[in-house]
Length: 72
Image (tube, rainbow, N blue to C red; front, side, top):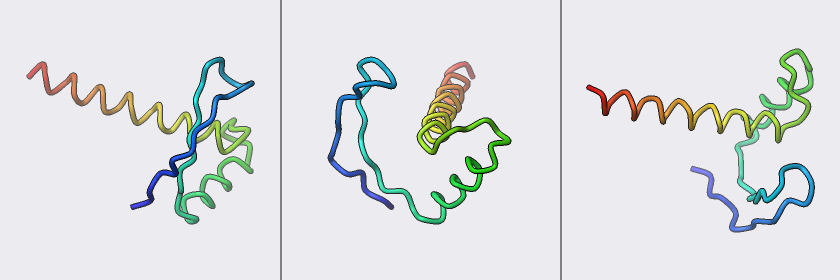
């Protein structure tokens, strides 16, 4: 499993107050992300945009699963 790199920085532009870290992503996944971004058909302009949206979607999915389990 890839380890995150213990390197973070304050963003100075894109999102006010955002902190960024670097993580290692397997080449195969990065190649697939690059193919998706390069087509332009799905509206992604950069790797960063794609990856942030993917993470947000996963967090929403997990929160929904946890909420659903609590209601049962």
